[in-house]
Length: 75
Image 1 (cartoon, rainbow, N blue to C red):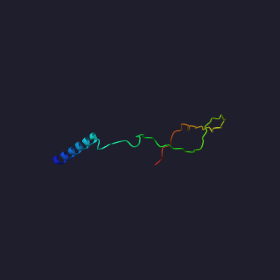
Image 2 (cartoon, rainbow, N blue to C red):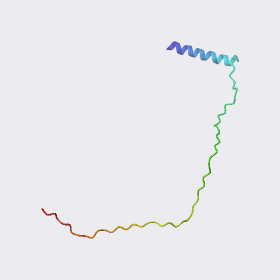
Image 3 (tube, rainbow, N blue to C red):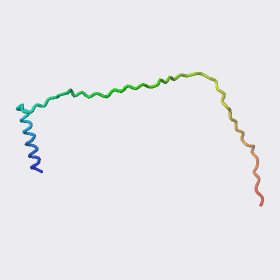
Image 4 (cartoon, rainbow, N blue to C red):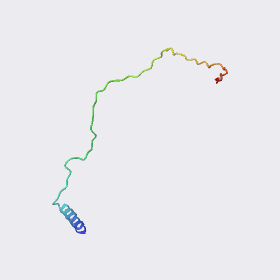
């Protein structure tokens, strides 16, 4: 493991020296601009409005049963 790290360190050192001396030139070939993709969609049109109307609503009435004594079953 130590030998592998040593070789990796030497390779990085050699690369840095070659870049410094001008043997290796790292240049940007295209500008690094990140753009979001553009989309265009044709969609339908929805309109929303209000209108006053009179509507009949059914009514519900509940009548409670009269209080009557309950009959006891005969045996």
